[in-house]
Length: 376
Image 1 (cartoon, rainbow, N blue to C red):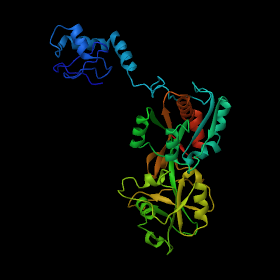
Image 2: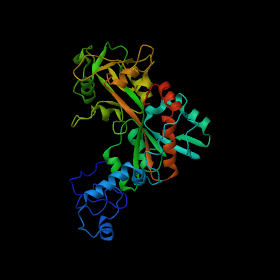
Image 3: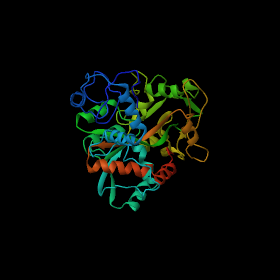
Image 4: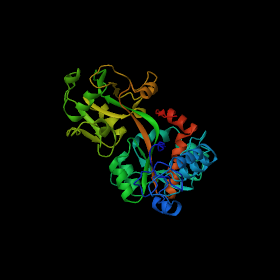
């Protein structure tokens, strides 16, 4: 917190003792109490003048017993969610899934990014069910659309999900849309993921730089011969770019960049793997845990833009290259988020509980087992 210097006139709030309100302020910047009323009721001096002695008293209060009261009042004015809890106070790092508190009872829908699928495969849902049988999860797909980060966030907005999973951060437009509907969205990172690019196994390509990958999916590079491969046309295979996060992140910062119109659009990573394995010249992408160990495709090493310093997303033992993801030497990593709808309902409580499950020591071990990189 910034405090007024001894030579700077400012208005002290009589309610919370904040001593750096601007001279022209009508309400306290911290607690929102009216400064006009306080001046009139407590001071016979000019309305916008503060004595140095008063600042000294305020400083002593901060350093002494009064400081505890001041800090308590300041904490009480931290913005609250609709449920009465601050966003920081209900997200905790528990030693185990079983020790997570305030777990609601009921059946809770979740969905969104398909890249979270390995969590269920490697036992996350089972561990939650065993520790908290009253908390039941149900994966929910969109009725007339494909699953993805954007779809999940939209379903959460429309109260179709209790919380959603996302491979990208929230967009400003989504924050605004939620605010206009009378609630807030909160994103909580739970893991790191590497995006893997893979080709038909017949292609003798060691790796690609990130700008080459961008140009392939934009349609600026259309033959493998242009990037040191054989004279074979390139067939980009992609999930629907409006619904999933990878293409959006890949093209971030490239003004006007769009997916090549001839790209083959598939529903999910399973379809992408199958299509690439059956199509000479094809290239696609997936969350690394979804493709590691696959024998029908060839996973490319990836280098930073304008570089040939290729880095593998996985090790020889088909384990995630965690060190390269942590230190950023693998050039296409992303954080995975759980999106909570802060609206004071049971769904909000379910979202908070799910985040706490994943961030617990137990949950982070399952995340690592699933092929992602834990963040704690």
